[in-house]
Length: 508
Image 1: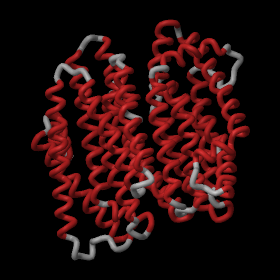
Image 2: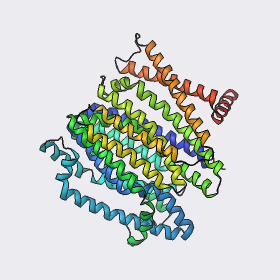
Image 3: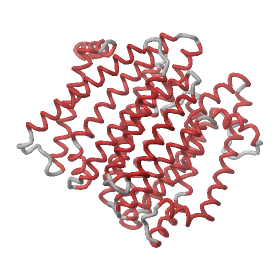
Image 4: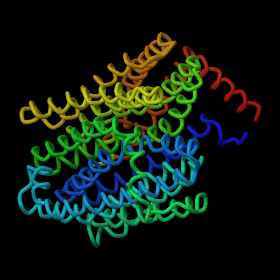
């Protein structure tokens, strides 16, 4: 068996790749703070990206998330030629929607910017309109790249798309460094457009090598694309609710003054990084694995595999979340050279929400593997609806940081609903796993807090970027030690894996 063919090895390699990308993303974030700060130009960039994010996630993500499963079904049922003709038809459907969306933006950009940024004056909204038009190529390339990556995954190609994606992060860094002084915020526009063009060009070339009949633009009739659209229909409700909340969140931030959108976005970008890492693992590796167990009627294996993924991902998430909770000041010093109170509090609340989000993602994909899409959709809708209502009712009466608390409340509600909705023959063992993870969380939090308290009167406390970095490194090492110790004490399979790993190191 090929070393890279096992689900766990694929998961680890993808996770490593995404962690590298996460690090590069932090570099991009740091450079963005350095060169663009919290100006209204940066606010306009964030709002424009958010607008296209809403469009992509609402119109296309339901298809993207179900594409792999549907393509495999078509390929096995009616052959590769029929399946690829359906894909070409889907690409044509996408191309028509790109044109329609561009026309809508040109015609209705004024009311769109008024809704998107109610706190902007006319001059700022005019700049926002220009930024929206500049990012149309980014929007098109992004969606084309999403579907090309999903299609390559169905042919067991996971790593080349990741390498191209890493290249995109490097281009972002170089663009900011060499172009920002000359063209300002438009250096990000150049970088995203170039990244998208390279990604689509390389991936489409790779696909043409594997499947010569693939076309980005073809004369295939649109009728064949219906199978993909119909298969994804239940997911549109949850996608709409999620994107509606994000839209309301960004729009509400404009009422808190210039720079509020950017401050909130910087915190969200940081806390989104773990989700970006794990979102590449769960749908690509876990969902097909659970689907096979379900189809085979092997409920014990279904339960065991899901619990393994929950332990693996939640322990990693735990490490990151505690850093967000206890090291917000240090992260703020690294980004802003100052302790930004709003940023620190937002980072803490959004960090806790990440834990709920990752757990919900795993539970949701397990329900999808069982064909219970509506249960997943219902939980997502309820949680995000609660966050939206809280934003509308209280956003004008509370400080900026409370928006992140509203988001946390919604995600926590979704997590609890999904926990009760999932069907496992060994659900008691899952609850035991979650209890041990929470015990580890409290223990790790307490130990790191005590370490920070002990260092409060030393030079390691964060008064500048160097000491902030030292503090982060020290807290990370303490966290790793506490989490590994907990796994050694309470873990089953994980303890065996750690012992085997240590034994191999000793032999070397």
